[in-house]
Length: 377
Ligand SMILES: CC(=O)SCCNC(=O)CCNC(=O)[C@H](O)C(C)(C)COP(=O)(O)OP(=O)(O)OC[C@H]1O[C@@H](n2cnc3c(N)ncnc32)[C@H](O)[C@@H]1OP(=O)(O)O
Ligand SMILES: O=C([O-])CC(=O)C(=O)O
Image (tube, rainbow, N blue to C red):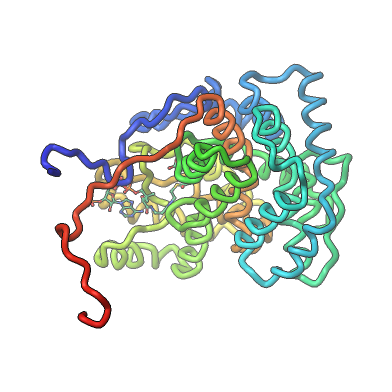
């Protein structure tokens, strides 16, 4: 019965749909959004512009960007009830609280139930603006402070840092945060975007799909890696300990976090920008040791780097966040804030050509057998 059936475990190497959003060349280590190289976008663009590009397909004119930016800033005001939900769950992991808060938004905002293309775009734009407000509000509440009100004079990245820390960020800190969000904005059929598409495939709404995506992003094999890298860096403690750490991990056949990728066989092109950020920021802040530990891990991994095993985007980002004084458990939520436009456009693309995503599993259980009544077992 099962002879000749090819099973692609983990759907490795399987194309399940066409997409016009981002392109990954895993062998060459290249990534583009809508045809624009990630290197150009990371060095020349802003998160608002990249979000517009991803969602609407083209770089905006000045007027289009101003209108989009106005929509984002206007959407930062949240229904009061969501703060009650955040307060009630404030002791949870920020990813759990964020997921719960997005669910609460779905229940509190009647517009969230609409499933037209237009509704997906409007609800999606609102969610892009709202995720940072939710994360910052939770962080303030769990720290015993009142949430910092959004500042309508600030752009997306600067306002996010302002709400998180309650102080106006420097231009340099804002730019680093902006670049980080750009680099995380979209990545094809990654696990969280694929999961969101599965949800849209059932004709569910966008908020539901984003809740699915948040749940999927949280795992250590996906968005959780940046937090784990930082834990690893603390455990290693000094560059000289890196070789022994890696050797022990490999001897136990355990993954070294921040390395490896389902698609890239060369270095993840996003990693270079974070590496530059870590090195420059560490030097500037008189803390070069974090970068030195990371580079010592890279060196120690070289003998094991078969199959093009290389650093991924999450290898360096945790240290940037740490240098900014951001607690470790906020690293995945930061990824979510960046990935929001990618989720939105993947959901819109799914909706445009919607189909129920429902593959097959090959049954390998017991042969047909007679039911045995409880008293006879
Ligand atoms: C933003 C992101 O989501 S990027 C990914 C973030 N995740 C991490 O950094 C966690 C650590 N990495 C991993 O667990 C994996 O690399 C994954 C889950 C991301 C990808 O896994 P896969 O697609 O199954 O990896 P792949 O098939 O390329 O593995 C090839 C070989 O490299 C090994 N390998 C893969 N990742 C690692 C790693 N981090 N450390 C050591 N060895 C690894 C595999 O064990 C496999 O070895 P084998 O052929 O001897 O069995
Ligand atoms: O594409 C993937 O599998 C994971 C990843 O790098 C991302 O989501 O940014």
